Image 1 (tube, rainbow, N blue to C red):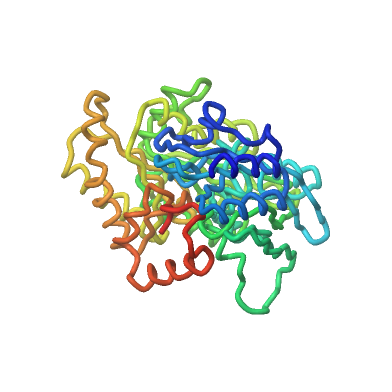
Image 2: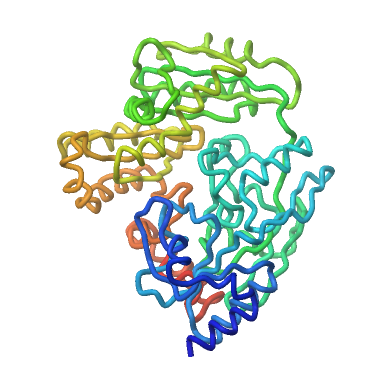
Length: 465
Protein backbone atom coordinates (compact mmCIF):
# COMPACT_ATOMS: atom_id res chain seq x y z
CA UNK A 1 0.00 0.00 0.00
CA UNK A 2 1.05 3.59 -0.64
CA UNK A 3 0.90 4.51 3.06
CA UNK A 4 3.28 1.65 3.85
CA UNK A 5 5.73 2.90 1.22
CA UNK A 6 5.59 6.43 2.62
CA UNK A 7 6.36 5.13 6.11
CA UNK A 8 9.31 3.14 4.77
CA UNK A 9 10.61 6.22 2.94
CA UNK A 10 10.32 8.31 6.11
CA UNK A 11 12.34 5.67 7.94
CA UNK A 12 15.10 6.04 5.34
CA UNK A 13 15.44 9.83 5.03
CA UNK A 14 13.53 11.21 8.01
CA UNK A 15 9.97 12.53 8.15
CA UNK A 16 11.02 16.13 7.46
CA UNK A 17 12.60 15.05 4.15
CA UNK A 18 9.46 13.46 2.71
CA UNK A 19 7.32 16.25 1.26
CA UNK A 20 3.77 16.10 -0.03
CA UNK A 21 0.87 18.41 -0.81
CA UNK A 22 1.67 22.13 -0.86
CA UNK A 23 5.24 21.64 0.34
CA UNK A 24 5.93 19.39 -2.66
CA UNK A 25 4.29 21.70 -5.23
CA UNK A 26 7.38 23.87 -6.00
CA UNK A 27 9.27 20.74 -7.04
CA UNK A 28 6.56 19.76 -9.52
CA UNK A 29 6.73 22.79 -11.86
CA UNK A 30 9.64 23.57 -14.13
CA UNK A 31 11.71 26.77 -14.16
CA UNK A 32 9.89 28.23 -17.16
CA UNK A 33 6.46 27.36 -15.76
CA UNK A 34 5.66 25.35 -18.87
CA UNK A 35 5.42 21.88 -17.35
CA UNK A 36 3.62 20.94 -14.16
CA UNK A 37 2.85 17.55 -12.71
CA UNK A 38 1.93 15.78 -9.52
CA UNK A 39 4.10 13.64 -7.30
CA UNK A 40 3.13 11.12 -4.66
CA UNK A 41 5.96 12.66 -2.65
CA UNK A 42 9.23 14.55 -2.98
CA UNK A 43 12.11 12.77 -1.25
CA UNK A 44 15.28 14.62 -0.22
CA UNK A 45 17.98 12.04 0.59
CA UNK A 46 21.15 13.04 2.40
CA UNK A 47 23.65 10.62 0.88
CA UNK A 48 24.14 7.99 -1.80
CA UNK A 49 23.06 5.11 0.43
CA UNK A 50 19.78 6.86 1.17
CA UNK A 51 19.26 7.38 -2.57
CA UNK A 52 19.90 3.67 -3.14
CA UNK A 53 17.48 2.68 -0.37
CA UNK A 54 14.75 4.96 -1.76
CA UNK A 55 15.24 3.66 -5.30
CA UNK A 56 15.13 0.05 -4.05
CA UNK A 57 11.82 0.69 -2.28
CA UNK A 58 10.35 2.38 -5.36
CA UNK A 59 11.46 -0.53 -7.55
CA UNK A 60 9.90 -3.06 -5.17
CA UNK A 61 6.60 -1.12 -5.22
CA UNK A 62 6.77 -0.41 -8.99
CA UNK A 63 6.69 3.35 -8.44
CA UNK A 64 8.31 5.56 -11.07
CA UNK A 65 11.06 8.02 -10.12
CA UNK A 66 11.91 11.51 -11.35
CA UNK A 67 15.52 12.47 -10.46
CA UNK A 68 15.83 16.19 -9.79
CA UNK A 69 18.56 18.70 -9.01
CA UNK A 70 18.08 22.46 -9.11
CA UNK A 71 15.00 22.01 -11.33
CA UNK A 72 16.25 24.53 -13.90
CA UNK A 73 15.54 22.20 -16.82
CA UNK A 74 14.34 23.99 -19.93
CA UNK A 75 12.77 20.93 -21.55
CA UNK A 76 10.56 19.56 -18.78
CA UNK A 77 12.92 16.73 -17.90
CA UNK A 78 13.11 17.34 -14.15
CA UNK A 79 9.42 17.44 -13.18
CA UNK A 80 6.84 14.67 -12.75
CA UNK A 81 4.11 13.95 -15.27
CA UNK A 82 0.49 15.08 -14.68
CA UNK A 83 -0.64 11.53 -13.85
CA UNK A 84 0.99 11.81 -10.44
CA UNK A 85 2.07 8.20 -9.85
CA UNK A 86 5.69 9.19 -9.46
CA UNK A 87 8.12 10.10 -6.71
CA UNK A 88 10.59 12.96 -7.13
CA UNK A 89 14.05 12.32 -5.69
CA UNK A 90 15.63 15.73 -5.22
CA UNK A 91 19.38 15.70 -4.53
CA UNK A 92 19.80 19.28 -3.26
CA UNK A 93 20.78 18.13 0.24
CA UNK A 94 23.70 16.20 -1.22
CA UNK A 95 25.97 19.22 -1.65
CA UNK A 96 29.31 18.20 -0.17
CA UNK A 97 32.70 18.68 -1.79
CA UNK A 98 34.57 15.42 -1.15
CA UNK A 99 38.02 16.13 -2.57
CA UNK A 100 39.99 18.79 -4.40
CA UNK A 101 43.23 17.60 -5.99
CA UNK A 102 45.18 20.57 -7.31
CA UNK A 103 47.94 18.35 -8.67
CA UNK A 104 45.59 16.09 -10.62
CA UNK A 105 43.34 19.07 -11.43
CA UNK A 106 40.18 17.31 -10.22
CA UNK A 107 37.28 18.12 -7.93
CA UNK A 108 35.01 15.40 -6.51
CA UNK A 109 31.56 16.68 -5.57
CA UNK A 110 28.09 15.44 -4.76
CA UNK A 111 25.39 15.93 -7.36
CA UNK A 112 23.53 18.57 -5.33
CA UNK A 113 26.40 21.07 -5.37
CA UNK A 114 25.41 24.16 -7.28
CA UNK A 115 27.50 25.19 -10.24
CA UNK A 116 28.34 28.44 -8.44
CA UNK A 117 29.69 26.48 -5.45
CA UNK A 118 31.86 24.33 -7.69
CA UNK A 119 33.25 27.30 -9.56
CA UNK A 120 33.98 29.10 -6.29
CA UNK A 121 35.76 26.06 -4.82
CA UNK A 122 37.95 25.83 -7.90
CA UNK A 123 38.69 29.55 -7.82
CA UNK A 124 39.71 29.41 -4.17
CA UNK A 125 42.31 26.83 -5.17
CA UNK A 126 43.48 29.01 -8.08
CA UNK A 127 41.87 26.63 -10.55
CA UNK A 128 39.01 26.94 -13.04
CA UNK A 129 35.89 24.89 -13.58
CA UNK A 130 34.83 26.33 -16.93
CA UNK A 131 31.14 25.47 -17.32
CA UNK A 132 29.63 28.89 -18.08
CA UNK A 133 25.94 29.22 -17.15
CA UNK A 134 26.16 32.52 -15.31
CA UNK A 135 22.43 33.32 -15.38
CA UNK A 136 21.50 30.23 -13.32
CA UNK A 137 24.80 29.19 -11.73
CA UNK A 138 23.46 29.70 -8.19
CA UNK A 139 20.45 27.46 -8.88
CA UNK A 140 21.50 24.69 -11.27
CA UNK A 141 23.25 21.69 -9.75
CA UNK A 142 26.08 19.51 -10.99
CA UNK A 143 23.97 16.36 -11.23
CA UNK A 144 21.56 18.13 -13.54
CA UNK A 145 24.38 19.73 -15.52
CA UNK A 146 25.80 16.27 -16.15
CA UNK A 147 22.43 14.67 -16.86
CA UNK A 148 21.69 17.24 -19.57
CA UNK A 149 25.27 17.49 -20.85
CA UNK A 150 25.12 21.24 -20.26
CA UNK A 151 27.07 23.61 -22.49
CA UNK A 152 27.28 27.37 -22.04
CA UNK A 153 29.67 30.00 -23.30
CA UNK A 154 32.91 28.09 -22.67
CA UNK A 155 32.27 25.09 -24.94
CA UNK A 156 34.40 26.55 -27.74
CA UNK A 157 37.53 26.12 -25.61
CA UNK A 158 36.66 23.59 -22.90
CA UNK A 159 33.87 21.43 -24.31
CA UNK A 160 30.44 20.37 -23.02
CA UNK A 161 29.87 18.83 -19.61
CA UNK A 162 30.68 15.46 -21.15
CA UNK A 163 34.23 16.72 -21.66
CA UNK A 164 34.49 17.93 -18.06
CA UNK A 165 33.67 14.66 -16.26
CA UNK A 166 36.23 11.98 -15.42
CA UNK A 167 34.20 9.71 -13.16
CA UNK A 168 30.71 9.11 -11.77
CA UNK A 169 28.90 7.35 -8.99
CA UNK A 170 25.39 6.31 -10.05
CA UNK A 171 22.44 4.62 -8.36
CA UNK A 172 20.94 2.23 -10.90
CA UNK A 173 17.16 1.70 -11.34
CA UNK A 174 17.21 -1.42 -9.15
CA UNK A 175 18.99 0.38 -6.30
CA UNK A 176 22.51 -0.94 -6.87
CA UNK A 177 25.35 1.59 -6.66
CA UNK A 178 27.89 1.74 -9.48
CA UNK A 179 31.13 3.31 -8.28
CA UNK A 180 32.91 4.74 -11.30
CA UNK A 181 34.63 7.57 -9.41
CA UNK A 182 37.88 7.35 -11.30
CA UNK A 183 40.06 10.42 -11.73
CA UNK A 184 42.03 9.05 -14.68
CA UNK A 185 42.67 10.79 -17.98
CA UNK A 186 43.37 7.40 -19.56
CA UNK A 187 41.40 4.24 -18.79
CA UNK A 188 41.17 1.96 -21.81
CA UNK A 189 39.51 -1.03 -20.12
CA UNK A 190 36.39 -1.51 -22.18
CA UNK A 191 33.18 0.46 -22.47
CA UNK A 192 33.34 3.91 -20.86
CA UNK A 193 30.11 3.53 -18.91
CA UNK A 194 29.98 7.05 -17.52
CA UNK A 195 29.10 8.42 -20.95
CA UNK A 196 25.84 6.47 -20.93
CA UNK A 197 24.65 8.53 -17.96
CA UNK A 198 25.93 11.90 -19.17
CA UNK A 199 23.13 13.47 -21.17
CA UNK A 200 20.65 10.69 -20.33
CA UNK A 201 18.47 13.08 -18.27
CA UNK A 202 18.06 10.61 -15.42
CA UNK A 203 16.49 7.89 -17.56
CA UNK A 204 19.19 5.29 -16.84
CA UNK A 205 20.08 6.05 -13.23
CA UNK A 206 20.67 8.78 -10.66
CA UNK A 207 24.07 10.47 -10.63
CA UNK A 208 25.08 11.02 -7.00
CA UNK A 209 28.77 12.02 -7.14
CA UNK A 210 31.14 13.16 -9.88
CA UNK A 211 34.84 13.68 -10.47
CA UNK A 212 35.21 16.90 -12.46
CA UNK A 213 38.12 18.23 -14.48
CA UNK A 214 39.73 21.48 -13.43
CA UNK A 215 41.89 23.79 -15.52
CA UNK A 216 44.48 26.51 -14.87
CA UNK A 217 42.81 29.73 -13.85
CA UNK A 218 43.23 32.49 -16.45
CA UNK A 219 45.36 35.40 -15.28
CA UNK A 220 44.67 37.73 -18.19
CA UNK A 221 41.46 38.40 -20.09
CA UNK A 222 40.46 40.67 -22.95
CA UNK A 223 36.98 41.19 -24.34
CA UNK A 224 35.76 42.73 -27.57
CA UNK A 225 32.31 43.89 -28.58
CA UNK A 226 32.07 43.83 -32.36
CA UNK A 227 29.25 45.05 -34.57
CA UNK A 228 29.07 42.96 -37.72
CA UNK A 229 27.08 43.27 -40.91
CA UNK A 230 25.45 39.85 -40.58
CA UNK A 231 25.99 36.34 -39.12
CA UNK A 232 28.04 35.30 -42.17
CA UNK A 233 30.64 37.91 -41.23
CA UNK A 234 30.61 36.61 -37.66
CA UNK A 235 31.35 33.06 -38.83
CA UNK A 236 34.27 34.26 -40.98
CA UNK A 237 35.55 36.38 -38.10
CA UNK A 238 35.61 33.36 -35.80
CA UNK A 239 37.71 31.38 -38.28
CA UNK A 240 40.05 34.37 -38.62
CA UNK A 241 40.46 34.74 -34.86
CA UNK A 242 41.09 31.04 -34.37
CA UNK A 243 43.86 31.21 -36.94
CA UNK A 244 45.40 34.26 -35.27
CA UNK A 245 44.69 33.72 -31.55
CA UNK A 246 44.52 29.92 -31.29
CA UNK A 247 43.00 28.39 -28.18
CA UNK A 248 43.09 31.67 -26.28
CA UNK A 249 39.53 32.24 -27.55
CA UNK A 250 37.29 31.25 -24.64
CA UNK A 251 33.97 32.72 -25.87
CA UNK A 252 32.41 33.87 -29.11
CA UNK A 253 28.75 34.86 -28.76
CA UNK A 254 26.38 36.41 -31.27
CA UNK A 255 23.45 38.67 -30.29
CA UNK A 256 20.73 39.98 -32.60
CA UNK A 257 19.06 43.38 -32.44
CA UNK A 258 15.83 41.92 -31.08
CA UNK A 259 17.76 40.47 -28.12
CA UNK A 260 19.31 43.83 -27.31
CA UNK A 261 15.95 45.59 -27.51
CA UNK A 262 14.38 43.17 -25.03
CA UNK A 263 17.27 43.39 -22.56
CA UNK A 264 17.37 47.19 -22.71
CA UNK A 265 13.61 47.33 -22.18
CA UNK A 266 13.36 44.90 -19.27
CA UNK A 267 16.71 44.76 -17.43
CA UNK A 268 17.75 47.82 -15.38
CA UNK A 269 21.23 49.32 -15.71
CA UNK A 270 21.86 47.92 -19.18
CA UNK A 271 23.09 50.17 -21.97
CA UNK A 272 23.46 50.10 -25.74
CA UNK A 273 27.04 48.97 -26.52
CA UNK A 274 27.53 51.55 -29.30
CA UNK A 275 26.01 54.93 -30.17
CA UNK A 276 24.71 53.39 -33.39
CA UNK A 277 22.03 50.69 -33.09
CA UNK A 278 23.48 47.75 -34.99
CA UNK A 279 21.55 44.64 -36.07
CA UNK A 280 24.19 42.13 -34.95
CA UNK A 281 26.94 42.21 -32.36
CA UNK A 282 29.48 39.61 -31.32
CA UNK A 283 31.12 39.28 -27.90
CA UNK A 284 34.60 37.78 -27.97
CA UNK A 285 36.74 36.79 -25.01
CA UNK A 286 40.41 35.82 -24.99
CA UNK A 287 42.02 34.43 -21.86
CA UNK A 288 45.43 33.03 -20.89
CA UNK A 289 47.14 31.64 -17.82
CA UNK A 290 50.08 33.96 -18.46
CA UNK A 291 49.88 37.50 -17.11
CA UNK A 292 50.35 38.90 -20.59
CA UNK A 293 47.95 41.63 -21.75
CA UNK A 294 45.68 40.31 -24.49
CA UNK A 295 44.15 43.60 -25.60
CA UNK A 296 46.80 44.21 -28.25
CA UNK A 297 46.62 40.73 -29.87
CA UNK A 298 42.82 40.94 -29.98
CA UNK A 299 42.93 44.48 -31.38
CA UNK A 300 45.46 43.51 -34.03
CA UNK A 301 43.43 40.48 -35.11
CA UNK A 302 40.27 42.56 -35.46
CA UNK A 303 42.07 45.28 -37.42
CA UNK A 304 43.49 42.67 -39.80
CA UNK A 305 40.08 41.24 -40.63
CA UNK A 306 38.49 41.84 -44.02
CA UNK A 307 35.37 43.94 -44.61
CA UNK A 308 32.23 43.24 -42.60
CA UNK A 309 33.07 44.70 -39.18
CA UNK A 310 31.05 47.89 -38.70
CA UNK A 311 32.51 48.99 -35.36
CA UNK A 312 34.34 47.42 -32.43
CA UNK A 313 35.76 48.12 -29.01
CA UNK A 314 38.23 46.17 -26.87
CA UNK A 315 38.26 46.21 -23.08
CA UNK A 316 40.03 44.18 -20.41
CA UNK A 317 37.70 44.74 -17.46
CA UNK A 318 35.16 47.50 -16.82
CA UNK A 319 33.15 47.85 -20.01
CA UNK A 320 33.29 44.10 -20.57
CA UNK A 321 31.03 43.55 -17.55
CA UNK A 322 28.41 45.78 -19.15
CA UNK A 323 28.67 43.90 -22.44
CA UNK A 324 28.33 40.49 -20.80
CA UNK A 325 25.31 41.70 -18.84
CA UNK A 326 23.57 42.13 -22.17
CA UNK A 327 24.26 38.52 -23.09
CA UNK A 328 23.49 36.81 -19.80
CA UNK A 329 20.15 38.63 -19.34
CA UNK A 330 18.60 37.71 -22.69
CA UNK A 331 16.66 34.74 -21.31
CA UNK A 332 15.37 36.74 -18.33
CA UNK A 333 14.31 39.61 -20.61
CA UNK A 334 12.43 37.19 -22.85
CA UNK A 335 10.71 35.69 -19.82
CA UNK A 336 9.50 39.14 -18.75
CA UNK A 337 8.33 39.95 -22.26
CA UNK A 338 6.17 36.83 -22.44
CA UNK A 339 6.08 33.33 -23.82
CA UNK A 340 7.82 32.43 -27.07
CA UNK A 341 8.44 29.32 -29.12
CA UNK A 342 12.00 28.38 -28.19
CA UNK A 343 14.58 26.37 -30.07
CA UNK A 344 17.96 25.21 -28.81
CA UNK A 345 19.60 23.94 -31.99
CA UNK A 346 23.06 23.22 -33.33
CA UNK A 347 24.48 23.14 -36.83
CA UNK A 348 28.08 22.95 -38.09
CA UNK A 349 29.68 26.34 -37.47
CA UNK A 350 30.08 26.89 -41.21
CA UNK A 351 26.27 26.62 -41.58
CA UNK A 352 25.20 28.96 -38.76
CA UNK A 353 24.56 31.95 -41.02
CA UNK A 354 22.78 29.74 -43.53
CA UNK A 355 20.51 28.36 -40.81
CA UNK A 356 19.53 31.81 -39.54
CA UNK A 357 18.87 33.11 -43.06
CA UNK A 358 16.81 30.08 -44.11
CA UNK A 359 14.80 29.94 -40.89
CA UNK A 360 14.08 33.69 -40.94
CA UNK A 361 12.89 33.55 -44.54
CA UNK A 362 10.74 30.43 -44.07
CA UNK A 363 9.03 31.69 -40.93
CA UNK A 364 8.36 35.17 -42.29
CA UNK A 365 6.86 33.59 -45.39
CA UNK A 366 4.50 31.59 -43.18
CA UNK A 367 3.64 34.22 -40.54
CA UNK A 368 3.34 38.00 -40.42
CA UNK A 369 4.49 40.24 -37.56
CA UNK A 370 7.14 37.99 -36.03
CA UNK A 371 9.78 38.84 -33.47
CA UNK A 372 12.75 36.52 -34.04
CA UNK A 373 15.22 36.40 -31.17
CA UNK A 374 18.46 34.73 -32.27
CA UNK A 375 21.55 34.52 -30.10
CA UNK A 376 24.02 32.09 -28.68
CA UNK A 377 27.24 30.18 -28.89
CA UNK A 378 28.32 30.70 -32.47
CA UNK A 379 31.72 29.33 -31.46
CA UNK A 380 30.26 25.81 -31.23
CA UNK A 381 27.33 26.16 -33.64
CA UNK A 382 24.64 26.32 -30.94
CA UNK A 383 22.02 28.98 -31.64
CA UNK A 384 19.05 29.80 -29.43
CA UNK A 385 16.32 30.70 -31.88
CA UNK A 386 13.08 31.92 -30.33
CA UNK A 387 9.97 33.32 -32.00
CA UNK A 388 6.95 35.29 -30.82
CA UNK A 389 4.64 37.99 -32.14
CA UNK A 390 5.55 41.66 -31.91
CA UNK A 391 1.90 42.32 -31.06
CA UNK A 392 1.37 40.57 -27.72
CA UNK A 393 -2.38 40.29 -28.40
CA UNK A 394 -1.60 37.96 -31.31
CA UNK A 395 0.88 35.85 -29.40
CA UNK A 396 -1.49 33.24 -27.87
CA UNK A 397 -2.81 32.28 -31.31
CA UNK A 398 0.75 32.07 -32.62
CA UNK A 399 1.95 29.92 -29.71
CA UNK A 400 -0.88 27.50 -30.50
CA UNK A 401 0.86 26.85 -33.82
CA UNK A 402 4.07 25.66 -32.16
CA UNK A 403 4.06 22.35 -34.00
CA UNK A 404 4.08 24.04 -37.40
CA UNK A 405 6.81 26.47 -36.30
CA UNK A 406 8.92 23.65 -34.87
CA UNK A 407 8.63 21.65 -38.07
CA UNK A 408 9.87 24.59 -40.14
CA UNK A 409 12.87 25.21 -37.88
CA UNK A 410 13.78 21.58 -37.25
CA UNK A 411 13.52 20.58 -40.91
CA UNK A 412 16.02 23.31 -41.78
CA UNK A 413 18.33 22.20 -38.95
CA UNK A 414 18.10 18.58 -40.08
CA UNK A 415 18.80 19.56 -43.68
CA UNK A 416 22.02 21.23 -42.51
CA UNK A 417 23.12 18.09 -40.61
CA UNK A 418 22.32 19.71 -37.28
CA UNK A 419 20.67 18.73 -34.00
CA UNK A 420 17.28 19.83 -32.67
CA UNK A 421 18.69 19.87 -29.12
CA UNK A 422 22.12 21.32 -28.51
CA UNK A 423 22.42 21.77 -24.74
CA UNK A 424 18.98 21.72 -23.08
CA UNK A 425 18.15 18.06 -23.64
CA UNK A 426 14.96 16.43 -24.93
CA UNK A 427 12.95 16.01 -21.72
CA UNK A 428 9.25 16.15 -22.45
CA UNK A 429 9.57 19.03 -24.88
CA UNK A 430 11.26 17.18 -27.75
CA UNK A 431 10.62 13.54 -26.89
CA UNK A 432 8.22 13.07 -29.80
CA UNK A 433 10.03 15.42 -32.17
CA UNK A 434 13.25 13.41 -32.03
CA UNK A 435 11.53 10.46 -33.70
CA UNK A 436 11.38 12.49 -36.94
CA UNK A 437 15.10 13.26 -36.96
CA UNK A 438 16.91 10.17 -35.67
CA UNK A 439 17.22 7.04 -37.75
CA UNK A 440 15.24 3.92 -36.89
CA UNK A 441 18.49 2.20 -35.93
CA UNK A 442 19.54 5.00 -33.55
CA UNK A 443 16.14 4.88 -31.84
CA UNK A 444 16.32 1.08 -31.60
CA UNK A 445 19.75 1.28 -29.97
CA UNK A 446 18.57 3.93 -27.51
CA UNK A 447 15.54 1.82 -26.55
CA UNK A 448 17.76 -1.23 -26.10
CA UNK A 449 20.07 0.66 -23.74
CA UNK A 450 17.09 1.96 -21.78
CA UNK A 451 15.59 -1.53 -21.47
CA UNK A 452 18.91 -3.02 -20.35
CA UNK A 453 19.30 -0.55 -17.50
CA UNK A 454 15.64 0.01 -16.68
CA UNK A 455 13.51 -2.94 -17.89
CA UNK A 456 10.46 -1.83 -15.93
CA UNK A 457 10.68 1.80 -17.19
CA UNK A 458 10.62 3.31 -13.72
CA UNK A 459 13.43 5.84 -14.12
CA UNK A 460 12.10 9.18 -15.43
CA UNK A 461 9.60 7.56 -17.81
CA UNK A 462 8.25 9.36 -20.89
CA UNK A 463 11.34 11.54 -21.09
CA UNK A 464 13.95 11.45 -23.89
CA UNK A 465 12.84 8.13 -25.44
